[in-house]
Image (cartoon, rainbow, N blue to C red; front, side):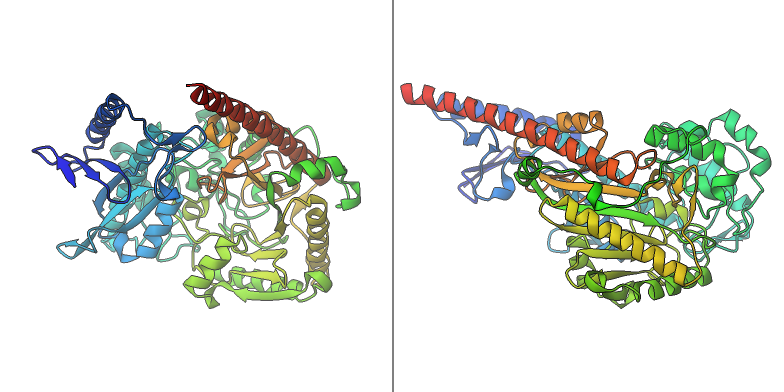
Length: 578
């Protein structure tokens, strides 16, 4: 049965999939009032159940229980129906964007439409491991972001403005004042040889009037005094044609990026040290102006993981992955490259991959040759990089121009050795496997890195590196070793308090992400931890740091699990005594 109030803004379903479903709704975007009504309804319902001598079905570790495990935890689905005519033109892109935002999307009411425009229902992916307030806030932030993007796409309907050809390039919607300033900068910017129909490079005539939404490290480094100091360089280009404006463009267009600065070629590191070195110092706690990045052979024999440590890792580690950045000297990086030079980069790497032998031997596949289902399957297995997304640094950096031309991946037979071509960097080398054998993964990573270097030397090429910074990369966060060591850990007890887990990781010099990597939620209590620092330490030191951090987190997980069990046992004893 069903009960509802006169205005049909509150309803309760009885004996459908669960004993009772509490529902609050309203027309238009009154999310705060709907949530307030839901809180009141939940309070009244709980009191009414208790007045009948009953209790709600719940457990300490899972929260509310349900007929379907998908509904445990808060048991709450927070949704909004939104009309998105522009985003509807590419529903796969819309759903991928929602996934980045931690949301689901489906066409509403069986693809009901308003004047031919599909209404989309947007709702939370995660219902356990976060509070009800966090769920509603994530939905609100996500829908606001989708509407911003919808308005950007709608504004792109005109082919030109003020005589300047804009094509399909879309500026962001940040604030009215900032948007007006940004459009004026775009219209005043000269044509750039790197421009395409879908992307334009801007020249900023003055320091951007950053808003409260702009939170990247670039924004904190590029203060008025630094910008004034670099004034003479604003018209200067590297030999590949990359400028300071090009470098800061992603952080200007995308307010919530972590770094917000990219390099278009290796000369950027010599031309813009007043921005790059402070970024490296903040990101890695390493002062490249005073110290040189340490070098040591990539030797798995130098790793020290005892049998006891391996046994402890095995209790929580589900998979191990090591990824490194390798770029080719003399060729422009993805944000600064041309179509011709991108093809040249792919051609060189294809020859390099052809030299791999033994366990590393495999096959190179061009991204454009893969169907959508193949792409999704490879991404789900962690073998392929993510598709273009409006929340990613490459979107504002010009890294998605001519997608998917001259991008691809090399994979060995067992999918334990992978190389990505022309994604964020020229090449990312990746070693991975299920389980916790980090020594085995590091050995394969070392061999793969050596094979790339040897193959490039056969082609008369060299890796992009300097004495002070080590390997160079598109993003300053990846200089030095260019290496990211990550474990996927199953942490059911620690999942109860993700903020504490995140603080612990930061204290240990680690970065915490959901089980799908950056901008993802924890699925099945699994979290990814990885090293924060990539320069100023050797590769072996980084691996040891991640191992030590993982062991500390596993110990905390076991302590927390024991405390939860003790509490549950005490509750069971009290109930038995009654």
